[in-house]
Length: 419
Image (cartoon, rainbow, N blue to C red; front, top):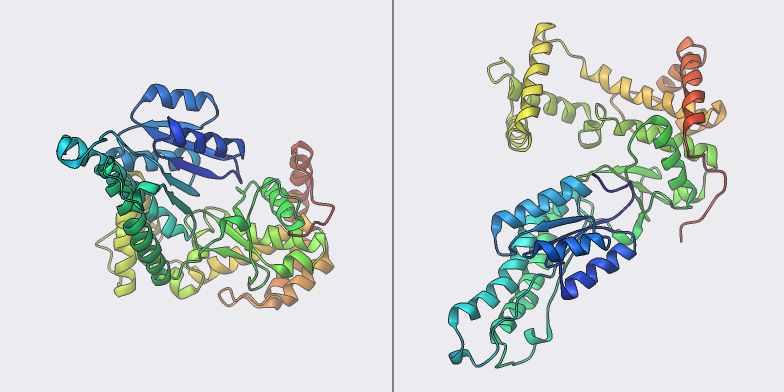
C-alpha cells in the first residue's frame, strides 16, 4: 500500500487515545494519510477503523520499536511530511517524596525519551529531503510549578526548553545549511488535483508518459521556471515564469521534458548533472560492484563508494555486481557523455510528442539556458527536426493515441493562477 500521489503523510505517536486520537482524526478529515503508534493494539485498530491508514503498536521508549515504526510508515505511505510526537504519560500525582521514584522516572522517560526517539528516527529522512515538519507536544506543566505532577512537568520542560529549542531549531538548521539542501515550505506544496495549469500539465504528462508524478511545490525563485529539487523523493519546483508567462502548450512541453528525467534510469542525473559528477558516481558504483577492477579512484569516488555501500540493500548490491560484470564482459568501454546527451535529446523528443507544436518546441529550446554535457541549442533543434521525419515518431504517436484513449485524465485547457 502507498499514499496516493499528492496525499500528505503523517506519523502520530500515542495516536490511539486522547489528544493523539483527536489529532489523527483531524488530519484524516483534511485528507492526510496517517500512521499511528501506541501501546494498545485494540485502541489503534479503532482509530484505523475511523480512517487512519496504519496501526503500529509499540512502546514510545523502545528504540527499535520507534525506528521500525518510522521505517514501516514510510515504506507503506511514503516519506513523512509530518511527525506529531504526542506520546506521553502522567501517572504519578503527589509530592515527590511520597511517590514511587521508578514510576516518577517513568513519567519523565515517556515524555522526554518518547519525543527524543521519535525525532531521532524521523529527522534523518526529513533532513535528507530538506522537507518535513515536527510537532512535539508540550504542556503548561512545563512552564509552571506543579508539586503534584513533577515527573510529567520535568519531562515536558525538557521537551519545550531542550529538544524544541536546542535540537530541532539548532541542529536541524545547521544540518540543512551544511548539506546545502533546499528547505521546502509545505504550505507551497500542490496536490495532484490542483487547478493550477502548470500542476495540471505535470499530472497529465506524467499519466501519459507512465512516470510517477513528483511532489510539486510553487516557489518564488526558480531558475528557468522549473527545476528538480535534490530531495529524498522526486520533487519539482515551479516558479513564476512557468506559472504566469507561458501558454498551455508550452507548459506541457516544459513538463514533459522535465518529467523525462524522472525515469529510474535517468534520475541519477538530477543529483549528478555534470559529466564530472556523473563519472564519479559511475566509477563508485563500478568499484563497489567489482572491488578488484583496476580503475583509479580519487577521494570523491572513494567517498561515494562508501556511501553507496551503506545505503544499498543486499539485493541491490547483487544487481550492481551483475551490472558491473556485464560492463566488463563488453570490454569496459562506456561513453557517459553520449549517455547524458541521449537522455537530454530524448527528453526533448518526449516533450515534442506531447506538445505536438514545432514552433513551441523551437522557441523553448532557444530560451533554455540549461547546460547538459556538451549539448547545444542547435544540437537539440537538429535532433528534433530529424525526429520529425522518422518512422519512430509515427510509431510513438500511434501508441500514444491508444494510451490516451484509455487514460482517465485530460490535458489542461484552462489557466488558473497560484493563490
